[in-house]
Amino acid sequence: MFDTVQRSKARREFPEAGFDTHPRCLEMAEAMRDLFAVGGGVRLEDLVGAGFTRAEIIEFQDSAARLALLASTKQITIRPDLLADMIEKARHAAPNRPPLPGGAQPTQGLIVAWGQYCAARGALLLDPWSGQRERCISVLSGYLDRLPIFPAIRSSVLTAVEAAMPQVHQ
Image (cartoon, rainbow, N blue to C red; front, side, top):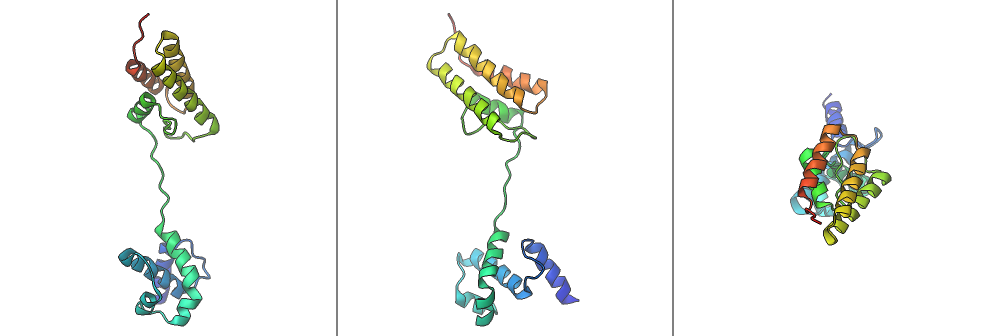
């Protein structure tokens, strides 16, 4: 009974492990994670000190190290941009930071449209005249049309960015 509980706990900690993975391999993977966290590395002597025989180390070392590495890395997802984030990103127009609200995937079309806006924004900063300003707003509007956002949010972003753009007098 205890062995079954211990195995199910180890399976939860190492979901990458198959059902044919030896329990000692799972234990070695956990020991490797602990040893690496404490000392920054895992030596043969450390594993022997953790209670593993040399035969177990030879047999399970590679697969335990792979499991320990897979269990130690996490997939980090970027949270979707909120309205304030979208306004801030549109004001600064950095090509590598497009505003992406929830439900938007960075497709090639979106990235190209964002790049066009960044180029238009750069042109406005270099040569501020009314035609550049209108073009910049139009290109941003085209980018925002491609996003899955409500019209009120689109309007808020356009209004805030337009207010932050340099005023052009002719």
